[in-house]
Length: 334
Ligand code: TRP
Image 1 (cartoon, rainbow, N blue to C red):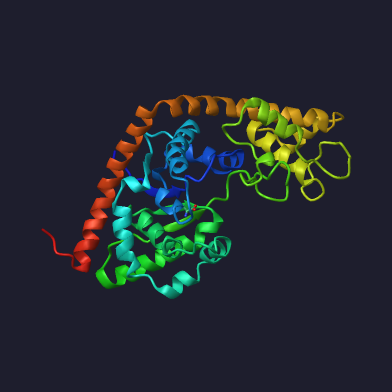
Image 2 (cartoon, helix red, strand yellow; image 1 turned 180 degrees about the vertical axis):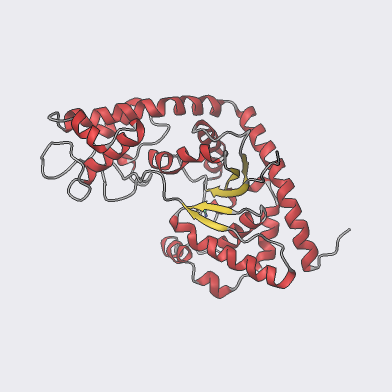
């Protein structure tokens, strides 16, 4: 039987902090299954993080701990190519070339640049401005079919496509023009104390981190915001009771139960029973992930080896594209 070539997928993740329940249920949980249908490349985008000031030892720690957490969530390094961006020099090398095929005007229109330069007004560095060019290099080096990203990165994938099309129109078909893949599946999890906003590490009280202890998780759920009408009844009403709806959504995602089933399970029992039950379900779901991540984080030799092998595989693919680009633009080959 003829083997069908799988489509390729690539995405970058900033090693910018601890992963939380929203990241897990909203995205990472579904990634493990993708390997059946796609050839997947994932990298930690450490080059991108320094567009805002980082503490060097923190960045170093996070770059390897985050790898451990992703593996513990089910991302298998034998089946996916997992690597660190700064381990593959081709990213920086192609970024320079692409800088010369990207217009000042188009970069000026990027909403993330406008947002970040307002937020970090004392450090509007050139890297912040050319951030999308490095991202285009990240992508185009691997000739992927799809780039799964959040809604906030869609504009960056679009500029990447524009750069690829511009380059191809001058030099022939050098780059595959990738499609953004904006995740529609996966649960949308809100903060436990701020059910109007997505769960975020910037509100730690309402954010359940994958590495939180069972006690911390239970405490956060006990303090979760429910509703203001004091109805004290587990009923799914996203408009009137967003806090309760969020807890039900978490519970449903973890147990596979429908909203109706959850309503009857807790009929007549109130939030005092419901909130700890959700907390317990989360504790049990996260327990194996936390234990595996803790084990891996102690095994530096293993993690280094994953990164070493990942960089080797990535460099092979990236190197082919980079050589082609160097040749096309006229760099003298020896
Ligand atoms: N900019 C992306 C983010 O902040 C991370 C990223 C860097 C990325 N390079 C990429 C995502 C390439 C997809 C493809 O989320």
